[in-house]
Length: 258
Image 1 (tube, rainbow, N blue to C red):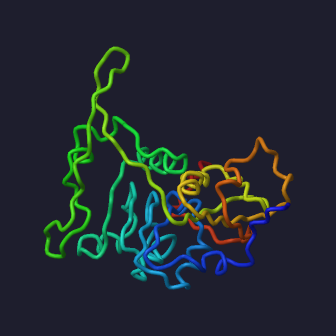
Image 2: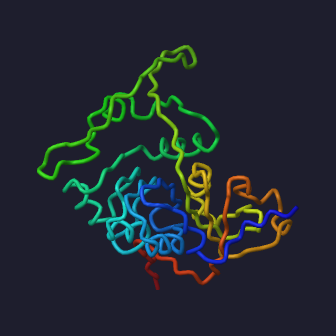
Image 3: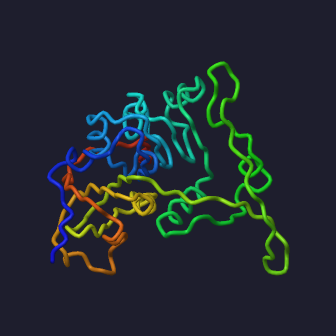
């Protein structure tokens, strides 16, 4: 029996994402953003969303369009420095933010998708990441309404030396949205170079993963050894074409020396 996961449109693919849902979203900066799906979610109107992504795009692109429309309640991210509206909402108490070290965030998503409940890491030991007290939500008048909790720290023997590790819980979400270069009807995905970034990890963490692909091919056309993410993690696929708009945060060019 054939398992065809393709959907007719982005609107159809995201139609059951309700207000209050949690989502893991691929992308790093503006690289690999599933923009067609984000726009469809914006048009759907769902709000009070809790989103896990490395960053929140910029003011007018990426997840920034959902933020500007006040659709996001909480962001779990590792970098938030390119979005002034993000800063404003956070400091005024409109947005809850859980800052997470980048490698830890990647492993939280991977572990969640792999069925691992938690793991110990050295990252964050001796800082507020482990000790707690980092602002998650301000009260609008400069005070802290919600602070990060203290986490368990345990000592392990590493090559004959006792070292401290902090316990980090994994992340799973209701949905995940990713962009891929190529995919087949079974959901097997191939990502383009650095656009691979957080996308496979975000896809794994979502109970329902929705992938937009530039090129849709038939099952068997992708070399199994070339698959970056197997279709077992993907629930829905839409084709968006290779001319889909892709923006660059900061374009730099090398000066030509005569």
